[in-house]
Length: 290
Image (cartoon, rainbow, N blue to C red; front, side):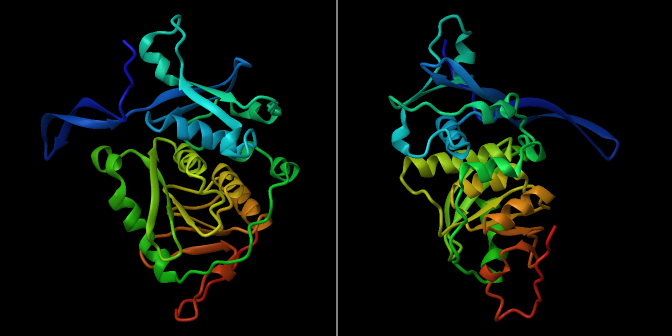
């Protein structure tokens, strides 16, 4: 039977509290591998640990972020594996992507993604030079936002995280407009996968580039997060934790406002201070260079 695994999995747990033990059922975030294949090349370009759901958006966002496709029309079809030699339940862990006729992508840069973990992708193992060689443009200047709008984003993200509420073990990537209204949100066991799903969804709906959006990711900002945000044209990237040094370098070079440690009414601005309209704020923000 070709049955797709859900995003949540039931498990029995034992709760130890005040010297007593009790048993109950709990919800866990499902984590399974997703293999992305290009057909008819029959070439596996990545294997990533992900939360099942929005697999086609994940694959499209990944291929867009890596420069394999540039437009929605570059993808003729995405489907799950139908190979009868593969166990039925595992077919939904393999996605076949058929590119348009005549498109011959350079696959050498993708070798670093075999095997990608759910934690943070390849992070610092990738080079900033790869983005330069791809010719990724610098993000246009503007827009600007007030600190109050930035402060409000984490609560809005958490309120919209349905699977996280049930499991407590999931990352998210969300896009907001400049007024702080939630536009789109995807969840996954890996925050880079969640961002791929967000970008893939935007690709399918002809919303790229995201030049007037704010993106917020749970966890920290790695190279992988900034690389994907750069290709999607995101001007402001926020995270609730720290960025890596390479993430700061990417943000600085490609004109992204990078915000970290967004908690309560406090955040750090690492690059792109000019997009933060702090005229009415008593706090002083200082740009930090790596």
